[in-house]
Image (cartoon, one colour):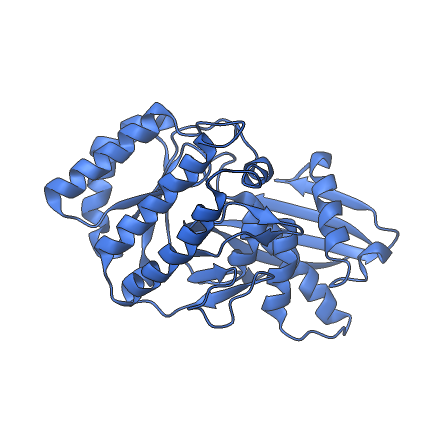
Length: 336
């Protein structure tokens, strides 16, 4: 069998994408930080065959992943017409623990898409734009995976102020102050349990949500304001928008039918401690959340030493097993 490999990062959305249309089309635009350390490494072995798939996670055969891979291959058949004539052995591993508040589907699907693009290139098939096609393919496996193809920031979904933005793929975004290109992300592990609501279910609940249209309009407006704030190095406005987006995501879940509360008591305690510390010291420390209980703490690299002392002294006690992960904005995927 031949082999190709990529290491692709996860990402954390600043403007949240929540709600989608078929197939994997976002109901609103999103903007994300590409992470550096949190990444998936995928080695794809392949040979002529009949479409047999084998998946190994951390060296252990994991047949439960096969249906998701099959769906990915079906959706991307137009991009990768060779896949039903090959056998695949997928060796994948994450640099972060399972259920840590980091989107492994984004990093995993982007890594797999990039490996497929390598095969396409080796076969001599036409490629108009390597990374754009990889972003399209990653999106068909995991919507947020479209953004993991680029760094330090990526935008997905049509937005009037981002040239070339598209619903089918993400685009790299660099028109920001340099301070944001080295922003830190310390991820507090509040809860290590499985997600109580899958992303697919969460997105589907927006279809008949009473506040959906207002939310989608709000995302466009917030993204416009965020772009200005990041260009002008306006950390205060940046933080206000990012925190509001995180809380709005959870508000949508709490007001859907059925409704869910994804935060835990310690999530709220951490948020209140961050607010109190920021008010008392005026240091630029902010939070965001994914669809779960864990907290991403965002701050400039220049404040890292001081804020890490605060995290260790006041926030670590609220983490499961006192655990947290340290990361920062990264440059995107790398071939191996």
